Amino acid sequence: GAGVSQSPSNKVTEKGKDVELRCDPISGHTALYWYRQSLGQGLEFLIYFQGNSAPDKSGLPSDRFSAERTGGSVSTLTIQRTQQEDSAVYLCASSLERLVATQYFGPGTRLLVL
Amino acid sequence: QQQVKQSPQSLIVQKGGISIINCAYENTAFDYFPWYQQFPGKGPALLIAIRPDVSEKKEGRFTISFNKSAKQFSLHIMDSQPGDSATYFCAARFGNEKLTFGTGTRLTIIP
Image (cartoon, rainbow over all chains, first blue to last red; front, side, top):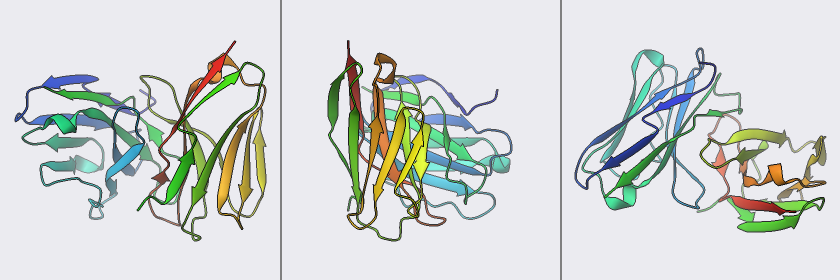
């Protein structure tokens, strides 16, 4: 596809379970971002990958959150031991390179922790 | 510390009217100011952007006004239409740094 894709589109899980969220960026985009959007709230930056550089993890809210980007393409955001406050929409975005500010967002994964 | 403050949180405008959303920033080093539009169930999409060397940028019905001395910028939507109903986010960036987003404005255009 031409845009950023994310899966699953919706995820319902029980408190304490681990979840994995996937992001497929636009082909050729070297920068990849994860954001969290709580209901009615703004975009909270989580983590940023650029090429082979060490990721910027400054936005991760706790050590239960981690992310990987394999082969400079697909990324997985993992939340361990989920809590109810983790319920939100998790958005992924990609861009051509760090200097280019136009980020293209995916549709998001809606996570509900019961 | 919130570096970009956005207001109002929600806005209702009649069809044909002008919608105005305001943002204020603190970091004078910011050099790029985009606006994103988000429809329900979708990710945000870039709408229009401005750099601080100009005071205004217009694209169709959408205009950004930029006031460097006041550290403020605003989005104006002329002849607002029901299809403009969405959430709008302002953002700011310095150099190679990541975007800092405002908290969003939910815009509703009523007939």
